[in-house]
Length: 387
Image (cartoon, rainbow, N blue to C red):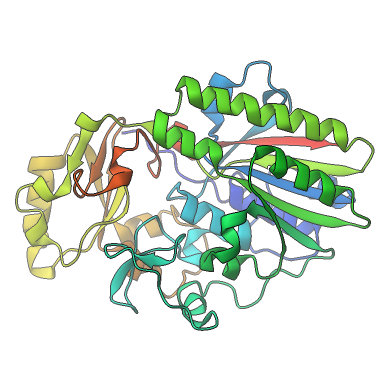
């Protein structure tokens, strides 16, 4: 299995955020992005970061012929790892890698609560019950990677879906931003335009989830997915024309790319013989990667089961080894990181995946998936336009 590892030394979305934050007055521990000069950002009156969820670099190259997005492509970066929205969007908010912010996937084991949660929806995994958050105290305990928000030298705005207004996750990480809510794609771009044209300097973070949703439902290269990219591009072209002369830098990127996994290639973890008896709790993570919490007395059996049932479709790593290799970031780790990574990480090979139970989990009907280490999942575009 070919593994694309994150380039935290100057070639990842973490480094992009370092370039942005450093240019706007907030020191960040990670190096700046090699292919985007900090000075270019600093010179601009307005800085707009647009995150198109799921638009991988390879997908843009395959689908983006004659688009303005492809025309202004400056290069590619790696995502963080795991290459998943929960980890990557937290990086866009904080400027930190998963090693520091410790948001590790769609399903995340939280030792202090004694349960697995879905961080982005802030609810328990299995019961699907919202977690009670008393004045943000629980969110602060779980998402404790940043003691205070970045101190930028200008007003900051977040262009988000209207349902994010009630999101505990979003409220915690965007508490230092003024929200601008939208309900569809034209409003998304319209809100960006209005903010750019407001008086004074500003930083605008804008997030669009629609492309990712199309990839999940229809497939990464399906006709409906490509059609949605064309609609995004039409809105992007209109935005560029409308903000001529405003001294604005627009940066467009993504949190990850996606790959398709056929239903026949999804292993049902519950059906893997003797796997469950090795685990102290259910697998956490994503369809394309899983964190395994193994009973100390069952480590030998776990490795034997993996070799017999899963080898050739997944690769197995000790979680601590991937931390040491820098997959989750550089520098000092969050004190809760290892608790959220389990003992072992299982990473799916090309075209493969694993789910708990196809019969009861709606998301397991998805076609497009992410979280693995393939080029399609790990590489995201850097698109830069200065108006």
